Length: 406
Ligand SMILES: Cc1ncc(COP(=O)(O)O)c(C=O)c1O
Image (cartoon, rainbow, N blue to C red; front, top):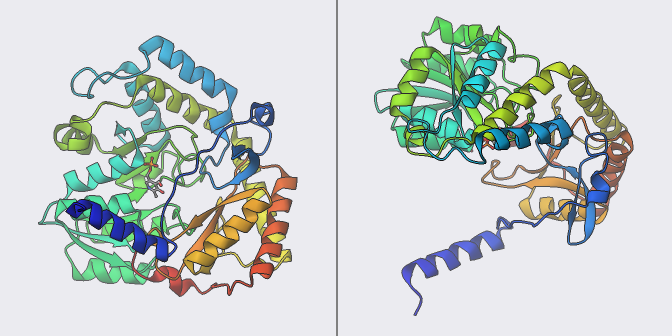
């Protein structure tokens, strides 16, 4: 007889499979022949013996394959060892960590920074530690799962405003004595940007903090990687696994906030610190992105090219101007089918389904990077147009689909 848990697991997996929502990992490998010009050719990987052009990573500047950054990681490991060996409050905090924190503060104008091993733990730690049942927090309807999880754990009263709607945010701020408003600089699944200056003004008016998850904006959008950021944003969460091409994250804010997190954030206190080698790498990647503005330029040329080709081929995109270009299909199974057909043509794009996005708004999440070659972008769009018309997908371009609850 099966145990209770075996029965539960089997039933849940069956239900997910039936709805096309089962998640499975794919083992990817690298073909070194494909990567000889790693930083100048389109990102590719091998799956089951076949090469694919990768249009689904968040490595927006192509930094994950830059040889100087591999050297920085190597040097960091030689200098400090390959791991931190302890929590930051024991012996896991080094001058490599401090140097990165200082660099991030210099870039953004914030007083202090705290490093985490991932953006997910930075967000949950921040929310759980900062808020409790006495706080009312308002957040955009599309904020990331890590923010929602942290807020739920905190016990705070959460109120959601309509995606990117200043009117809706203002209504909530006016009706509730709000501790903080939370949004993202660039929304991870829609690719659109929050009106940060306007939200900041609203927050000032209502004496609430503005917290911005800058995972998809940092090092790639000009907006908040400058000394002005701290004037608009009270707490900024930046991640190193997207445009910086490596791993880890930081919470940036006032010295008082960071001191408070050091003493109270369980994810920080009871977890092995980010390795110093990774901190050295993230510092090198931050500096590399600063001294190579041509990478941002190339990324925006690639975004512009992709959007123009889609317009010409009648491929209806959501209207994003960032590296994240969603194409809403609606049905989860059809989304998988389109992604599969694109794979048959050597193009790998993300097929994003609920609960990552609202029910009825399953989508392709196509991401551009500075490393994509123009001919690969052209092939991607041509194949996309062909597959969409072949599969006969009823395209959902109405934005309401994404305005539902997550
Ligand atoms: C908006 C946003 N915040 C936070 C995270 C988590 O960052 P990390 O991948 O470093 O855990 C992600 C990653 O998917 C994200 O998209």
